[in-house]
Length: 171
Image 1 (cartoon, helix red, strand yellow):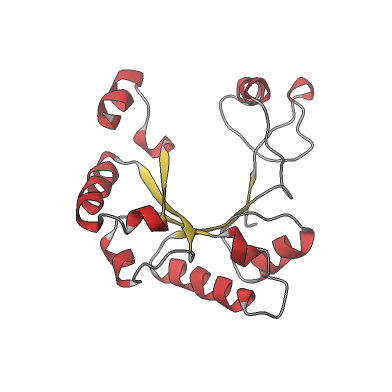
Image 2: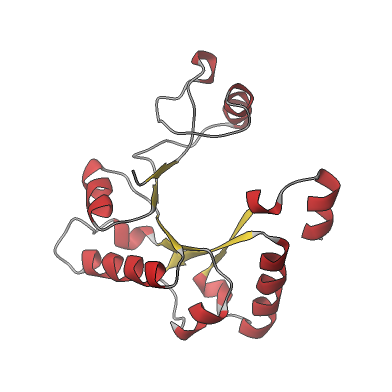
């Protein structure tokens, strides 16, 4: 079905990213693994969402064609504290790097969290600190004004021609 939609809309598969939660990933490993391999074969990017909250085996990460590991916000919440979350985030980021995946930290809400993630070498961070959710009309206006791309900024105002996104990349 996805292959047909991509063909019918003449969409580059690399522009499509699908996320699957770690918990769902473990429900039917064999069947889902084959489906993910077919999607990746089309060129679709794949992400594991909420990483670290399920009970998956790390050995499964080698077997799935995943491009992105998304660190769950429950760990990002404590990345500036002393309760071990920083060590967990650092370990997940290192795991993503060693498996040549992009690491995304979810739920960044403060400058301190963003700074801590940057110091740990996080590839991408997303959350309200960077941009609050926007409505459909705002998104369409921003896409129209920016030639179909979504650069970043929370103060984005499509009427002023400023870009919009909820993701900030590491400099």
